[in-house]
Image (cartoon, rainbow, N blue to C red; front, side, top):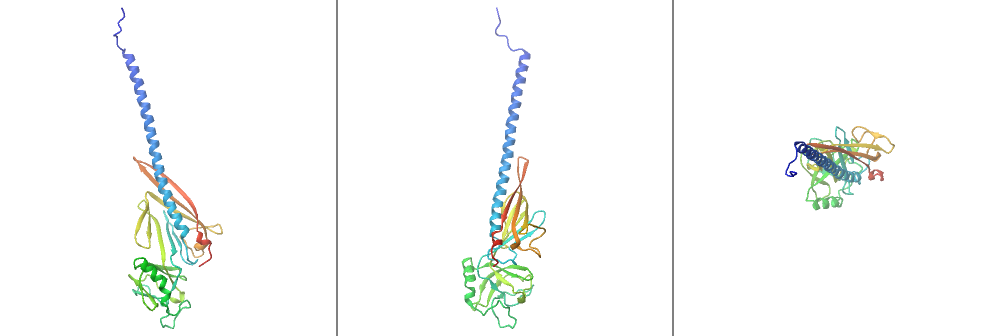
Length: 290
């Protein structure tokens, strides 16, 4: 009579255990592989989103650079380095005011004359005092909290600076400068002028892309950006090297900007680094000088 209660042999148990272990190893390998693929894909999506959003912001600002500004104004500045710094400017108002009295660098004189002041040294672009000349500036100032940033610029020496414009006199002869000393001399023989400027400075700081608007402090734009580079292609096909503008080229000479951003995303101790690029045409560089 057969004994059906006989159990598995040791060999059978070992074979069963081996097969089970093999299945577990294969399953773990498959799951771990899928997890790594998921992590890699998540890092890739994360870094691409950061780069794409940052490129979109920079592209829009580059296309607006130079609005209502002449060729001799530094509408686009690039300071080269391991990661470049990009400064973009555009004019907010159609009314540009002349500077009608010398300003000494280092002085803390709190007014800027924008009309004749009785001196024999009067530049050709200065007119008789007219309160209506300031109407647009005054309205914009009051509509924006009473204090705005203005920009004084010497077109011959190609230098300028931001200052806070917070008041004007009733005669239309001068505006008030709130703040500290002037950085530079402004000789009226060079016909310096005043603009209401929007200035934005982009740079990489501590692993993030940041932006400063009108010297108010850097704010985050996109995280995990390690480098920003701008290659400037002139209308004659040559590539501008070094800092821009140069003695021989200004922003009106530009055809386009090849902009690239490098970013990194890290998850679970693993990192993915990507670089995205975009070619941007400076639309205002093709308009008539203003």
